[in-house]
Length: 415
Image 1: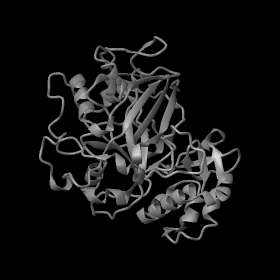
Image 2: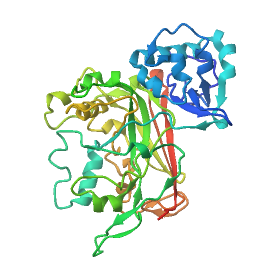
Image 3: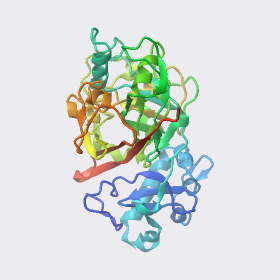
Image 4: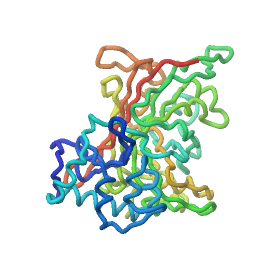
């Protein structure tokens, strides 16, 4: 049975009562505070929860009223899965009970009137490389005389540690990075602005749980540790990356900026989107084994918008490695995770040209320009370009669950 709400939600909205993502917003000179998106409004939680004493769950540092009165989601992330469940149930009840309308409706704030903020403090950031189609495409371009996938790729989720301090919220301008780059026809490297600035359409997972040093997190504990999901654009300077990545991998070509959506979709909202991951072609070690009864593949459809032209629709369900396996692998050596950690899926790409999640692939390393709606032919990003990522997933009873969009505009280099 589809839940109905008294709140004003457009019929075609992907932000109905089955979704209820969390974000941090402010209006005018007011301080930032935690809200839940419903339709085209943010519901200000703190004044409502402060008067409701029916939620007994306590988290570190206080109760849920204190957590949502903060200027970030940090305290809510640390409160743990029982608190997340209790708060979601309370918000759902508030928005579906007609008797609560007069009390709650004054605390609906139009999104057009608010400024969105970075929703949480990023503790650590890890980026994976888990799309077989993306990895194969890159391998074909960079290693044309060798197999596209390296020998380890189907045995473990490949990843690297990124830079938490340059993860920014949607809408933040992206300054074109500078660095060393060396084209194949150049005899020596030069320094200057990146000439091959790219995007990577990804899905990020926000951690709320914490483990002890030396104690791995099993894939089966995924939902106890992951609070929610955010769209991620991992901006990439391909020329800088190509020159620097041997032998230790991504560094300055990735660390200048990573954008995430302002709204964090609770993992609980994606229950109907769970699907089996692609069929495995190699036997997996026990800690990475899929549980056929509890799959964590996700049926998300992404959309890449380049200056107003949708150029790609990557399918997340095709990702070879799931977020549960990524978490298990990330901690199997005893590494810790903590509230505020963010890890991203890696570029999402499908089998078709229109499903490629980076401009490196869409333009096949610049050899096949992409035509935009204004008639221009493009390969990599130019100053002034704007890229917006969107995504949605199936929800209950045929509704769609929207992930908050992530957008960024390229500004000139400062070197």
